[in-house]
Image 1 (cartoon, protein in one colour):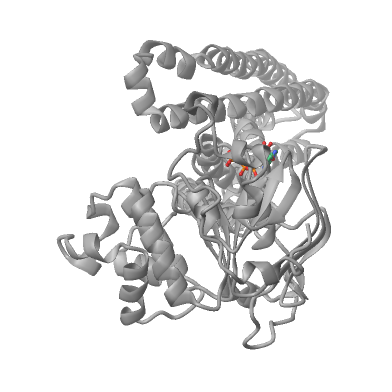
Image 2: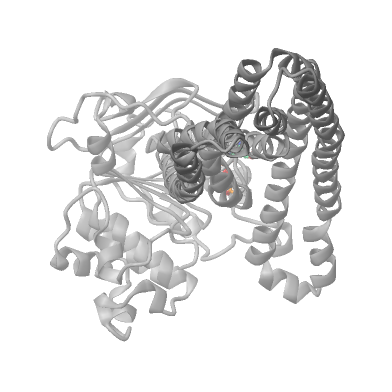
Length: 571
Ligand SMILES: Nc1ncnc2c1ncn2[C@@H]1O[C@H](COP(=O)(O)OP(=O)(O)OP(=O)(O)O)[C@@H](O)[C@H]1O
C-alpha cells in the first residue's frame, strides 16, 4: 500500500512538473516575477528524487516481506498437507517453488503498484494535455490504442513463455537433486558423463524459452520505440502549429511536448508488466503448495486406558484410478504385534499409512478402540498413534532434543530409556557430547540414525505404534534385541510392523499377508508358513527358495495365545 501511495505521489509530481516548468519559463521570458513558480519547480524536482528513492526502498522491503510470507505459507501448507499429496511433488520442484518462484511472486505486489502508478502518469499527462491544448491531446489520443494493443499482446505471449520457463527450471533442479541423492551409484557405475548430460538436457529448452521471452520484450520495446517518438513528433508538430497560430505560448509548447512523452510512457510499463506476469505465474506455483489439502480432524478423544484395538473395515485406497489397497475386515486386538508382509508393491506402506491415519482411505473406516480415527482431534490422534520410518527426519538439534521432539512432553530420563530400548544408548554415549551432541556433528551410520528415529517413536508411544520398515538398516541380532526390549517396555501398546524378514513375522502375534493390494490371509506366521506362496514372499530364486535373512521355519516363535486370537482376527 505504501509503495502504491509513493508511486502515485511520484506520478503526480511527474505530471505537475511540465506544467509548473512551462509556466515558470513563460514568466521568465516575459521578465515577470517567477519566484514562487521557481520555488515550486525546485520543490517538485527535489520531491521527485525523494519519492523515487523512497519508492525504491519500500519496494525492496515490500518484496522481502511478501517473499517471506509467501514462502512460509507455502511451506506451512506443505507440512500440514496429507503426506501422500506432498510426495507427488519432486524435491527439486518444491525447492524451486520455495526459492525462485517465491521471490518472483514476492516482487509482484510492488510491480503491480508501480505498474498502476506508471499508468497514472500517462493518464494524468493526457488530462493535463487536454487542459493545455485540446488539439494536441486529440493527436496523442489517436496513437494510444496501438500502444495498448502492443502491451496486451506482450502480456499474453510472455505469460505462456514464463510458465514454461518456470516448469523447466523446476525440472533441472529436480534432476540435480536426484543426481546428488544418487551420487554413490553414479560414482560406482561410472555414469558421471551421462548423468551430467541428463541433468543439463532441459537447458536447451530453457535457453530457447529465455530467448523467446527476450524477443517478445525486445519486439514490444521496438514497436513502442517507433510509436512513441512518432507520437511525440506528431504532438510537437501540432503544438508548433498551435504556437504559430498564437494559441500556445513557448512555455505551453514545452509542457505539451513533455506531456506527449509522458502519455506514451511505454518502456517502463512493458518492463513492469513483465514482472507482474512472471509474479502471477510464480504465485500460482507457490499457491499450489499452500493449498494442498490437509487432513480434517474431529472433536473426539479416545476413552482412557483402552487396549489399542485396531480395526480396518471396508477399506479401499485408490491411486490414479487403480485400487492399491482393499481390506474388507481386519482386527488387531489391543496389545498385540501384527506384522504386515507381502512382496514389494503389495500395499504394505499404504496399509500402514491408513492404519495410523497419515492418509484417509477412499472408502471404509479405521477404528482405534472402537472410535473412527477421522473423528479424533489432532492432538489425540498424534499422541495415541506413533510412527517409525526407515529414514527418519530428526532435525538439526541435539540427540536428546531429537528424541524429545513430538506430541508428548518427554523427560531426560525417558529420553535415555527410549534410547536404551532402541539399542542406541551405547553409541550415543560414545558421541563427543553424548546426548547433547548436535546431529549435524554426529557421524552416524544409517542403522544408528534409524535407531534414533525408533527411540523418538518409543519415547512418544501411545496405544498404537506403526513401524513401516523402521528396522530395515539394523542387523538381525540388533533388531531382535530391540524387539525384545520393546515388548518389555511398551507392554500394552499395539504394534503394526511392516516386515520384510521372516524373523520379524515369526515374532509377531499375527501376520497380515498382502498380495496385489488385497489381504491374502491373516494368521500366525507358523500357520501361514505351510503355504508355498507365503514362503515365496521371503524368498528369491537366486536363494534357491531359501528365506532371506534369518531362517525361521515352522518353529518360529508365535506364542500360545495365538490360538485364542484366531477368532478375533478375521481376514
Ligand atoms: N501416492 C501414490 N500414487 C500412486 N501410486 C501409489 C502411491 N502410493 C502407493 N502407490 C502404489 O501402491 C502400491 C503399493 O505401494 P506400497 O508402497 O504400499 O508398497 P509396499 O508393499 O510397501 O512396497 P515395498 O515393500 O517395496 O515398500 C504400489 O503399486 C505403488 O506404486
